[in-house]
Length: 196
Image (cartoon, rainbow, N blue to C red):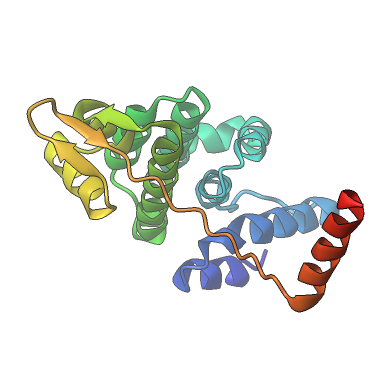
């Protein structure tokens, strides 16, 4: 089984391409009846989590042989992250990811997953709240209160230190409205016909 493309994607930090690569290679191996004893299940599973594809991650976990689950603690550790994601245990995602000694092959991938996840959660907080407590931001972001406050303020949020509340900076919606002469002419004609 040639995993060179997967290793190249990991080395090049092209993490969003790892899941489709693994899926294709796994299907090719299965269609040939090749043994999947050496399959990088932990990388494959993390790749689906990186893409926030929890359904594919769950399917892969359920189809993974029990021997692989039992023999590979790193695979079980990736699955703990998946379980936390599935249960919306925000703090648990960080605890599961930071509470395991990852192999060099996957350590950078886990760090990239955490950064991507943190950005996704921050975007959700930005869209869902106008004000939020520092403690809640710290909980959702997997940080202590000081780091969470600094992260939020670096992204334009403001702090009410007395109340320990953060005010969310909503992104400005850009509207590109181009008005050319033909559109203005049609609007004028329309208004003219309505008045007469």
